[in-house]
Length: 382
Picture 1 (spheres, helix red, strand yellow):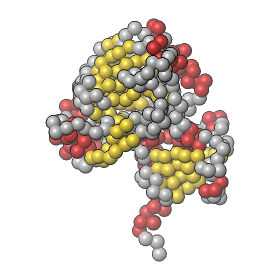
Picture 2 (cartoon, one colour):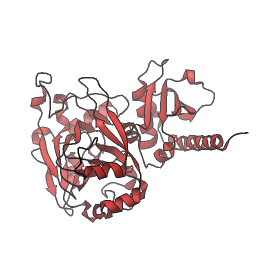
Picture 3 (cartoon, rainbow, N blue to C red):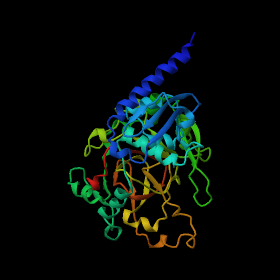
Picture 4 (cartoon, rainbow, N blue to C red):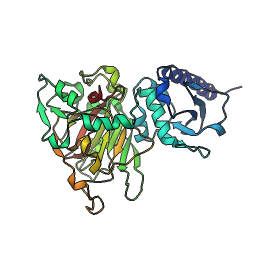
């Protein structure tokens, strides 16, 4: 007789397969080029879920053994339903350690890159090949022409910025949100002991060291931010804003709601931030507390920024250079890159078009919330 736990796992597995098959029907055959083969899905704990086959369509295939698969996709238990409902996305799962993609020993392909591309097709309806990435660079405003990041009022016409692929700031947008007005005690009461992921060390591409993360409760981490007992370890980067707060913020109205997944939180002490990188999707960054400085480089400057390809994340591209700490002799072209600095205060919103490089520094204890438009093509390409 099956135990209750085994029956529950089987039921969840069947529901997950049905959900993925439903979403897979919307993926066009042309976008599957180069992804043909078998993919094995597991939980991070090693529980087998199912095998997926890809040829001219995507389908679950009970007749394929694990030994015939080229790529393994491992997920934390329970996240497939969140992926399907778009309350979380593959990029967040990668960043917070809840998703792992790797090529199996018998594979001759780049399993990480193909696995992430497949997940983006299924759950984000996003496909951005090399040609479209290059198109972003010459269709966006060029670095030579980008003298400052314009600050606009909420009622002013902003259509031209989307068309030109140019960043801009709107002041005091977030001040109307209930979340903006909530006290720490009110937020703690809603979230309780929510577990969060903390980025302790970013990827070091020069020393070839991967990023490192730690776990904490939201209460312990945020409470420590405002304590004078000592330094806080880690940056609460790329954590999905929990559903308990879904009625406390507003999605940007310039795109349809379907364009966005659940937003992410970025909370950290003074001096924290993210090194130079770019996202290949449109991004709306909202500042809730504190001040943040952002250094912007146009897509046209990519040739000077020493980009690094990370196989398992098709929509994210970091630079090898840490602008705050680097040897000029190691990166001789970097000094030729044009940039613009801007500052966000509490309530401000920054629109970052797809492909814009940004180096982020929190001037003081900072809370930000951002919306990635992962379910539509970059606006500058539309």
